[in-house]
Length: 357
Image (cartoon, rainbow, N blue to C red; front, side, top):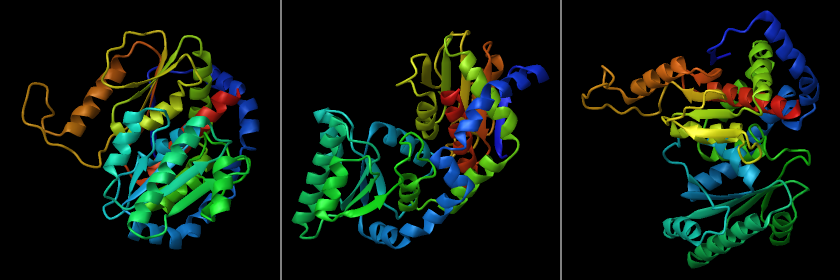
């Protein structure tokens, strides 16, 4: 695999065997999960070409794709798409707020007032009140903008049979519809229609991403590292787990992996940040390459070549080496789409095992 996995503790053969024993019951269950079955049988790969014509129309016509999605769907989608650099000439992806904050709504809508906007709604489960609110406001905005321009509003809905309000509205108004399997888990969308569709709208190399995703699932190396990290997470459930990210593009996948919303002992920290907790397990998720580096003036402690990315890498490495608590680092050397696919698959497998143990 192209993922670099480091740990600051040497594990004995007995500890690794025990980790596998702990993870094995979950591994038996995980192969039945829809997203993993689609990967193994390459059904996700078959979905890539499905949307080409529609994506081409959207990317040539609209400056912004306004996305409305439930809390779990939103976290799962952003965990992946934030790892990719937006391509010039493709629509900007903007998410509607999922709360009742007037200032949050106003901030988004004011920014889009003079832009051409299409609406994409992702509704895998029955909609919460905040999702119904966000969809209603976004639909009204997009429709009003289209009426001013004397064109039909462009609204696309990705739904499952468990969706109710948004799905019914899509059928009633004959919006563009993309159906996902009823067994799709909203927390695991990395190789499903919503992520594939949005990545294509961004101009990302989706084929390479899905290829990397498959390569990780089919690689024998994860058989040691993945159960080990998952079993150590279970071991530290009561003591606490901190998931670190040092770069903005890795913040959302670190939040998604930590799941502090449903795991009281899990935290996500954007580094550098002071933390003296030496009893917890720490997991750092990051990359050693930036889409765009910044050259700094000379200052005390700067990188000798003036690279901000190399300074970040140095500080992260020194931080990891100095940690007294048990720690893992999961890193990418490059921002290649294939490598990103491997990273996402590895983290999704790890989290699935931890949740199923």
